[in-house]
Image (cartoon, rainbow, N blue to C red; front, side, top):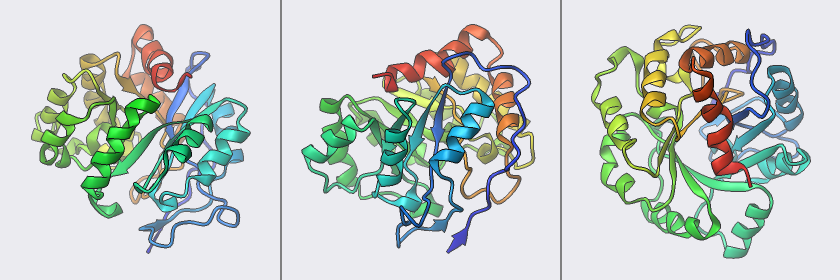
Length: 287
């Protein structure tokens, strides 16, 4: 089982201040394992990355609010995420992982606890595609809650699951720019398919995870044209987040302050940054 590197403990201060009200729309909490054990069938073991550390990071970087995304190392045990949201005094919202056995009452409890969506991992190194029957049945339950679905895909999956993506009846978010590979160029088939997908008014995309798109060396500038293109295509349906504490990074560990600086390169227009960092996440997570 892979043991993950710890995040950079010394994030720089962003060169430009974030606007008041900015959201980190993709971050995680891990453990602490003594209180919230990791799933026995996990594919990796992260270092503890608790609520207190995340909150201090957001204070340092200048984020007002955040979205804690349940990661696969905790499986469908969402307690660490729910605990962090409860302790945040309204600052955080969440995206859960479910296994299909959840009752309506439990989903309603998670909604009351700040959850606004569910996430499915299709990525090969995290175990590959989920049970597609569970996926379909879960997605069908989300509309009544006003939730969305987050899809963590490998680039090829955008093509493999194109028909299924087209059938999703609620807003859905593609994580990390679809994990396209910068080395394959802006004209690669997977990125063209992602651009086409963004014509769907229910499709959203996170223009983060530059370290996963890049060939792997800081400051990950080869991810810039991909993010810029997606922001240009769908300025009303893009989100950005740090992805702290950056699980499964085997190349260059990002510095979160530098990632904020890179986001300013992604989105140089203040009006578009207002959408990216404030208006768009408010649509999905503001209530």
